[in-house]
Length: 84
Image (cartoon, rainbow, N blue to C red; front, side, top):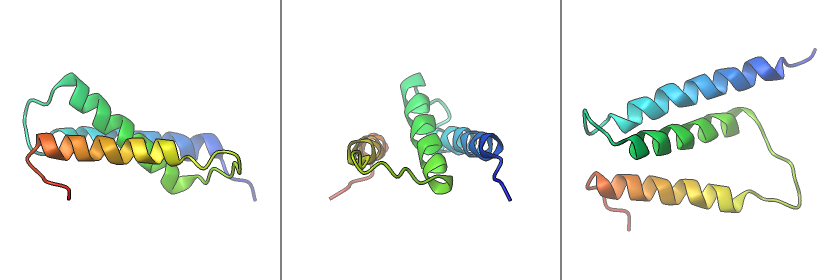
């Protein structure tokens, strides 16, 4: 059995774009272009990470994960949510 990697990746990207768009519009009908782009980028990466493991021992992806968390915190703070 062989996984159709491209189809799985395409599904993850489509899922991430749709969810990112939805999240960007969750608390406002008119999010900024930057908010939309940030949410879509974050959710696409999250969706990809749901389907794929990145097994690079020299790169733990901690910087990317930290960036995603920081983006989420900034986004939530702009919407009035407080992360403590």
